[in-house]
Image 1 (tube, rainbow, N blue to C red):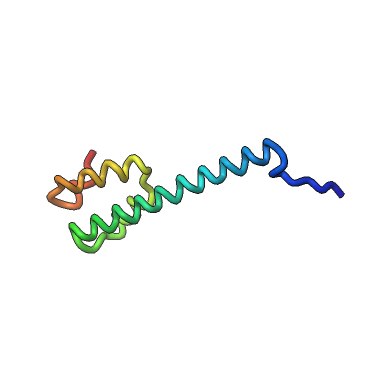
Image 2 (image 1 turned 120 degrees about the vertical axis):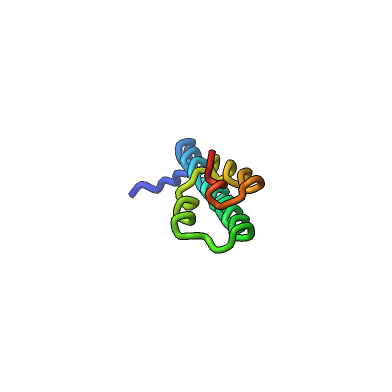
Length: 82
């Protein structure tokens, strides 16, 4: 039986670091979603399911733009205008 520790290889280390980077990116985006949803709720009240779904499927760039839009938005719909 071959006893091989992938972390002892460059390829194994590269794969590990790629996974960590992807995980960190997903964690950051999830944090951005949470903050954005709290801001929306504070400004406009309860969020419709359609808005929550839109936020769950948004990219980090979209979340950032929408968060900036909150500052000038008169309605929740205004937030999602580009």
